[in-house]
Image (cartoon, rainbow, N blue to C red; front, side, top):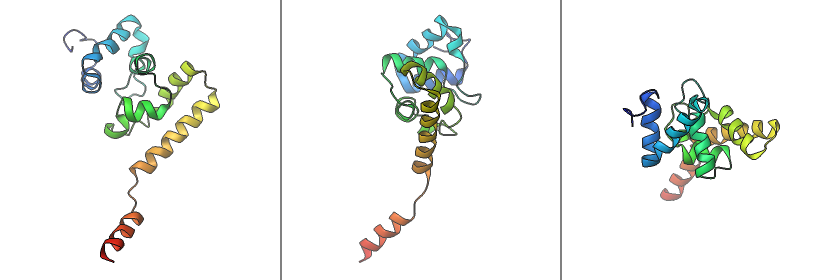
Amino acid sequence: LRARWSAVPADIVGRLVAVYGSEAERVLETMDADPALAARCAPASSITRAEVTYALRAEMVLELDDFLERRSRVMLYGLDNGLSAAPAVAQIIGAAHGWSETQVAEAVARYRAHVREVKTFHTEPLAAAASAVHA
Protein backbone atom coordinates (compact mmCIF):
# COMPACT_ATOMS: atom_id res chain seq x y z
CA LEU A 1 0.00 0.00 0.00
CA ARG A 2 2.87 2.39 0.69
CA ALA A 3 4.09 1.96 -2.90
CA ARG A 4 0.61 2.43 -4.38
CA TRP A 5 -0.24 5.39 -2.13
CA SER A 6 3.20 7.02 -2.04
CA ALA A 7 1.70 10.52 -1.75
CA VAL A 8 0.13 9.60 1.60
CA PRO A 9 2.52 9.93 4.56
CA ALA A 10 3.86 6.57 5.78
CA ASP A 11 2.58 7.07 9.35
CA ILE A 12 -0.98 7.41 8.05
CA VAL A 13 -0.76 4.35 5.79
CA GLY A 14 0.87 2.28 8.52
CA ARG A 15 -1.74 3.17 11.12
CA LEU A 16 -4.61 2.52 8.71
CA VAL A 17 -3.24 -0.94 7.95
CA ALA A 18 -2.74 -1.66 11.66
CA VAL A 19 -6.30 -0.59 12.52
CA TYR A 20 -8.32 -1.57 9.45
CA GLY A 21 -6.27 -4.35 7.85
CA SER A 22 -7.36 -5.03 4.29
CA GLU A 23 -10.01 -2.29 4.56
CA ALA A 24 -7.25 0.35 4.81
CA GLU A 25 -7.30 0.65 1.05
CA ARG A 26 -10.97 1.75 1.19
CA VAL A 27 -9.94 4.66 3.42
CA LEU A 28 -7.07 5.53 1.09
CA GLU A 29 -9.43 5.44 -1.89
CA THR A 30 -11.63 8.08 -0.25
CA MET A 31 -8.56 10.35 -0.10
CA ASP A 32 -7.98 9.76 -3.79
CA ALA A 33 -11.61 10.58 -4.61
CA ASP A 34 -11.57 13.76 -2.47
CA PRO A 35 -8.07 15.12 -1.69
CA ALA A 36 -9.51 17.39 1.04
CA LEU A 37 -10.18 14.22 3.06
CA ALA A 38 -6.42 13.56 3.24
CA ALA A 39 -6.08 16.41 5.77
CA ARG A 40 -5.00 15.40 9.26
CA CYS A 41 -7.46 16.13 12.06
CA ALA A 42 -4.59 17.65 14.06
CA PRO A 43 -1.00 18.44 13.01
CA ALA A 44 0.61 15.65 15.05
CA SER A 45 -2.21 13.14 14.50
CA SER A 46 -2.28 10.37 11.92
CA ILE A 47 -6.10 10.51 11.88
CA THR A 48 -7.39 12.00 8.65
CA ARG A 49 -10.77 13.34 7.63
CA ALA A 50 -10.96 10.30 5.29
CA GLU A 51 -10.72 7.86 8.19
CA VAL A 52 -13.50 9.59 10.10
CA THR A 53 -15.65 9.70 6.96
CA TYR A 54 -15.01 6.01 6.33
CA ALA A 55 -15.95 5.14 9.92
CA LEU A 56 -19.18 7.11 9.60
CA ARG A 57 -20.16 5.33 6.39
CA ALA A 58 -18.84 1.81 6.90
CA GLU A 59 -18.86 1.41 10.67
CA MET A 60 -21.85 3.58 11.59
CA VAL A 61 -20.00 5.69 14.15
CA LEU A 62 -22.44 7.72 16.24
CA GLU A 63 -20.29 9.31 18.97
CA LEU A 64 -16.87 10.90 19.35
CA ASP A 65 -15.63 8.42 21.95
CA ASP A 66 -16.84 5.53 19.80
CA PHE A 67 -14.49 6.66 17.05
CA LEU A 68 -11.50 7.75 19.14
CA GLU A 69 -11.55 4.87 21.62
CA ARG A 70 -12.98 1.86 19.81
CA ARG A 71 -12.70 2.43 16.06
CA SER A 72 -9.40 4.27 15.62
CA ARG A 73 -7.88 3.10 18.94
CA VAL A 74 -6.08 6.46 19.39
CA MET A 75 -7.36 6.89 22.92
CA LEU A 76 -5.36 3.83 23.87
CA TYR A 77 -2.37 4.11 21.56
CA GLY A 78 -2.10 7.74 20.46
CA LEU A 79 0.56 9.92 22.06
CA ASP A 80 -2.02 12.42 23.29
CA ASN A 81 -4.92 9.94 23.50
CA GLY A 82 -6.62 11.66 20.57
CA LEU A 83 -7.17 14.89 22.50
CA SER A 84 -5.66 17.11 19.80
CA ALA A 85 -7.79 15.52 17.08
CA ALA A 86 -11.01 15.44 19.13
CA PRO A 87 -12.35 18.88 18.09
CA ALA A 88 -11.95 18.20 14.34
CA VAL A 89 -13.28 14.66 14.64
CA ALA A 90 -16.28 15.94 16.61
CA GLN A 91 -16.97 18.52 13.90
CA ILE A 92 -16.99 15.82 11.20
CA ILE A 93 -19.17 13.42 13.19
CA GLY A 94 -21.42 16.28 14.27
CA ALA A 95 -21.89 17.48 10.70
CA ALA A 96 -22.89 13.97 9.64
CA HIS A 97 -25.44 13.68 12.44
CA GLY A 98 -26.77 17.23 12.47
CA TRP A 99 -25.27 18.27 15.81
CA SER A 100 -25.33 21.90 16.90
CA GLU A 101 -22.09 23.66 17.85
CA THR A 102 -23.12 23.18 21.48
CA GLN A 103 -23.47 19.42 20.97
CA VAL A 104 -20.05 19.30 19.28
CA ALA A 105 -18.47 21.18 22.20
CA GLU A 106 -20.24 18.92 24.71
CA ALA A 107 -18.97 15.81 22.90
CA VAL A 108 -15.39 17.11 23.09
CA ALA A 109 -15.79 17.98 26.79
CA ARG A 110 -17.21 14.51 27.55
CA TYR A 111 -14.34 12.87 25.67
CA ARG A 112 -11.72 14.90 27.54
CA ALA A 113 -13.34 13.97 30.86
CA HIS A 114 -13.47 10.30 29.81
CA VAL A 115 -9.77 10.29 28.90
CA ARG A 116 -8.90 12.01 32.17
CA GLU A 117 -10.89 9.41 34.13
CA VAL A 118 -9.51 6.39 32.27
CA LYS A 119 -5.92 7.61 32.31
CA THR A 120 -5.86 8.64 35.98
CA PHE A 121 -4.30 6.22 38.43
CA HIS A 122 -6.73 5.78 41.32
CA THR A 123 -5.13 4.61 44.56
CA GLU A 124 -8.25 4.50 46.74
CA PRO A 125 -9.84 1.40 45.16
CA LEU A 126 -6.46 -0.36 45.26
CA ALA A 127 -6.00 0.42 48.94
CA ALA A 128 -9.52 -0.81 49.70
CA ALA A 129 -8.95 -4.01 47.74
CA ALA A 130 -5.63 -4.61 49.52
CA SER A 131 -7.29 -4.11 52.91
CA ALA A 132 -10.03 -6.59 52.01
CA VAL A 133 -7.46 -9.21 50.99
CA HIS A 134 -5.53 -8.85 54.25
CA ALA A 135 -8.61 -8.77 56.46
